[in-house]
Length: 186
Image (tube, rainbow, N blue to C red; front, side):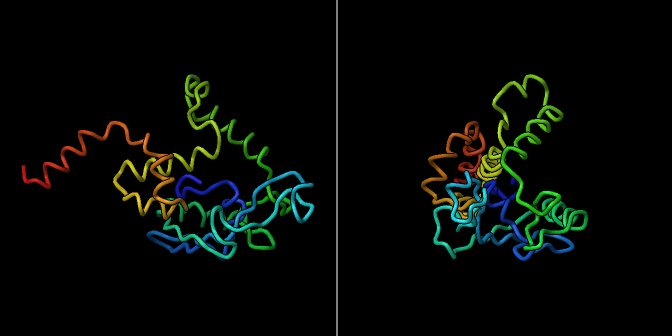
C-alpha cells in the first residue's frame, strides 16, 4: 500500500495479471477493480466483498501505477512464497478467501507495537493501514513529483490531491527559495 499508494480495497483486488514485475528496475501495477468490504446484506453477492470499479472512475476504467524496484522485489518474493488465489489475487487467507479488514488491522497494530517507540504507538502516527497511502502521496509531493503525476498515480484529481495533501508540504520554504534562486540565476 505504501509504495504504490493503494487503497486497502485496491490491494485486496490486486491480481497477478495486473503486475509487471521485471527482474530489475521499475515495474507497474494496472489496477482494474476494488474489493471493498461491507456487511453481507449490503453486497450484491451475499459475500462480505463485492468487486467494483475503482473509486471515482467508470467501472471498466483502470489506473496505471509505476512501482519502484523495492515493491517489485517484495511482490516477486510474495508470489514465490505464497502464490495466488484461484482467481489470481495476490493477497488472501490460507483458504483462498479475501482477508478481512479487522484481520489486517489487528496485524497492523501489532506491527506498530514492534516497529515504533512507545510514544509513537500512543500517537496517531500510522494509526491505520490507510495511512500508508497518505504517507506515499506525501513523500511523492515532498520530493518534488509534480502534483499532476502524483494525482494520476494516486487516482485523484489535482484538486483533491492539493486539498487533502497540501498540509504535508510544510517546511519546504528553504528548498523552494533555492529553486527560485537557481531559476533566477542568483
